[in-house]
Length: 420
Image 1: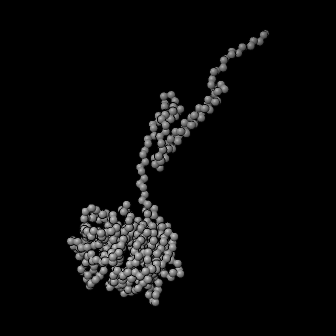
Image 2 (image 1 turned 180 degrees about the horizontal axis):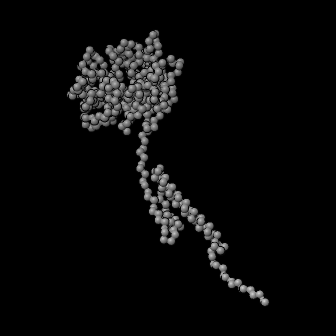
């Protein structure tokens, strides 16, 4: 019997993308696009987290990228909906004050005197026009005598002795400017001669402005004028002013049995100020103060009322500063901005101030053998001597503060620092 074969029915091939030569390529492209879209969304998420945690300012992506990425991940009616990332304006960071990062140890400098000069004690530093002037002492007989005037250049560290000779025992309270050098040629037991010599003729014989018989008055210099307060009687003190050009001396004020007779005057930019008695009396017996203010050229005097006791007022043309006691642990340092009227509004700058000096941009002051500066532009105080260093404030001028490092008493260590 003849064997019969069943004919296979032919089935046509499916027109499938997977079966075509382009299938793998298209799948690869879709995979790449999907991966890039996923990375884009991941990057957006990371930027949002970073912005929220670290306040990083990240700009928004261009319009449409988020929407296009969402379409790539859509399926039917389930569409990934992504809202634009909100933009947060970061809060501005306050500009730090330059003194916030002040390095006390790195900023201080020591005045080094060559050993062959044989000066081992130092005092009364003052600063003017890039140079520091101070007294130098050595042992003469059995006593230390401040017998030298030394000029120091902090830029190069050079020091020289000025050719000025003593008549008595000590140089005390030297002051100088471009034209004049003035100092007290002091006796060992007090008193002496107030002397003046021109800076361009230091080798000449100094002129004796006045002989002082009691005490050692601190001298102020401004231009060709000097001023000082001197004890002239048992209970009487007088404020003197001298014009060095003519050597004419005048008595500006007198104090009789008054604590204001122990307050030093101050001179700046043609102005002389000093403390005087007010009208209000305090419970401890003190009397309120006024700051006397006189223009040296016009001789016009005005009283500036201050609702505190005033001692050793100083003035830089913009600000006044003073203590309300006599350099004790109970003294408060006050500062007040100059005003048009005759009344000041004082601000407490620091408590327990032993001494202070005013400069153009700050007040240097000492509390518990630590030195600070009160900055006028911020109304804040900053420590300028290092931790564990004990210091005695000696002066300030032209942006510098000068002090004695008294951590050890084995020798005098004169230091200084530039502020600002």
